[in-house]
Length: 118
Image 1 (cartoon, one colour):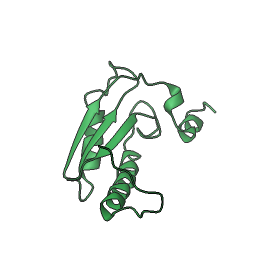
Image 2 (cartoon, rainbow, N blue to C red):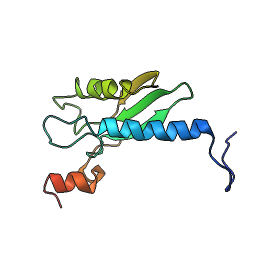
Image 3 (cartoon, rainbow, N blue to C red):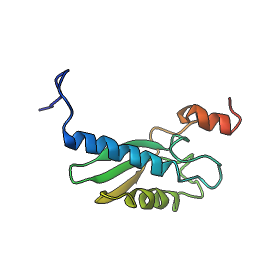
């Protein structure tokens, strides 16, 4: 069974806490850079999903430019450590996926501008 808020229902404190935590996570992710590309992992479009459980455990689904990327071993660890440093986060799991395949259309306009693609 799915539950949703009625149109004029205020979000619960839990929902507000999760929304605030998601913003903090995004800010932390914007501090993690791919060493080969001078743009953060969030603006590059490497972060596909951020899920926050009721116990404030975080699951991040992310990708890289290619499966054989030289930072495939280290960048997910940097992402995990950055998010784990946020007060209130109970655990972090980074799921490295390659479907859908990453492409330049996943980047924000700011990232494209930084890389001279706009």
